[in-house]
Image (cartoon, rainbow, N blue to C red):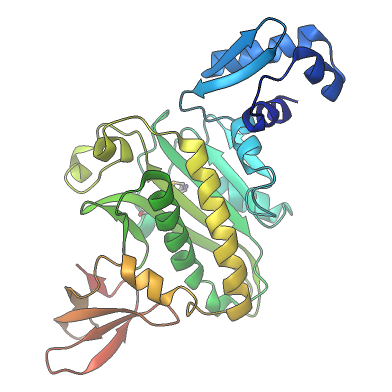
Length: 321
Ligand code: BTN
């Protein structure tokens, strides 16, 4: 009921009367009053006016199951329509994989306020303190063959970059293949894990970690990482960012399902690519060399031009910038 009350209050232009809430949800005045008190405790500014009713006039950075559900309800068809929220979890990727094995629906979204065993790429950890960042993982059941799945990471990176640009108005960029960069520093990390057979995918989990209100970072990454709060100078709300990402991702995923390649975002992705038109270092099996990055092709590999003018496509893991 709290999710529905939140949605009703948020969408209403005017006060919503206690009577209307009681009738809509078939509950007593006391039950409505209790929900309003809970909302206030969670950080919503609820205005209650005699003979008129209730109105939400503002809120802090509230991250709860109900906040996420009420923002996603009606916004997407499947992405984030089943939300599993925890205040504390080992890793949202681990939970999403477990839910995938237990038969959860395509698009199930796991979100946590804090992770005790956050995972990064290449076996690294992902520092995941409470109250400051977004830790989310979406579980997907793609119908396309396993060989296409790595492209999903690029679809997610593109969706996150677009969502952050919409939510903040900032010049958020992508560092190939899937780091999100703001003012030259990393703001988002993406970790994709999948369970496959030779010819089909059981499920894919795409985990996204976003530094939203982080004020300080561990020493080893302090000069390479930043957060929205640091760059903007004020606290940002996390739940609307999650909802915007789900909306962007659903649109892009559906297009990707039709085309099974990245040609529909290739041009736009390349515009957001921080490496585009820059020299990168290619770490080949036999040699390492400098080359000029030209952008991704329709399957997500980076096209580079060598000093002798020849063009090559390189794969993730072969490039350092
Ligand atoms: C990277 O190393 O750049 C990828 C980091 C991915 C971190 C996110 S946070 C949410 C999800 N759960 C995890 O344990 N990892 C990912």
